[in-house]
Image (tube, rainbow, N blue to C red; front, side):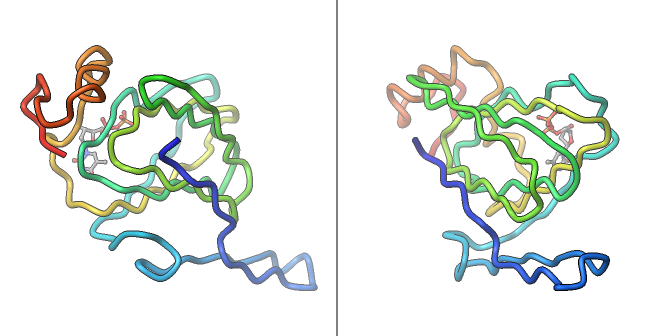
Amino acid sequence: MEYQVITMKNRIDADESLGGLCFAEAERDLPFPIRRVYCIFKVQAGMHRGYHAHTRNWQLLLCPYGSIDIIVDDGKRRETVRLDDPTRGLILHPGVWREMIWNQDDSVLCVAASEYYDANEYIRDYDAFLQYRKAPGADPEGKRS
Ligand code: TYD
């Protein structure tokens, strides 16, 4: 599957009340440059988002607070990665379908993306996604990888 689960480099203070810190550096710890960051917040438990694939974006997904399940689908298999620890990161390659399920109110999803926002590099129709996986160069929505 075209994803990796990583443990972010971290510093957990011996004094638990001081908490922890985790980090990743573009192109050193991540296989892509970062052109954009965004967060999704104030989502209620049980809600689903996503339902799309990107043709060009590499992304790092983090859940610094709460618990979110990420369903990753390559057109043949679907796997679920639970993000419920701030140090756990999910790197999604371009071309995978993702759905996100909020397990806990107010869980925060942070994303670092390799590309500037471009609505034209989204595939939002699942059948179009399956077509794209079969023949990326002849994508029915006119997207190119
Ligand atoms: P979208 O990616 O559709 O979120 P989700 O799939 O999780 O529901 O984005 C929601 C809206 O925000 C959509 O109108 C596009 C806009 N948006 C931007 O303008 N810039 C961005 O970087 C992102 C991620 C979204």
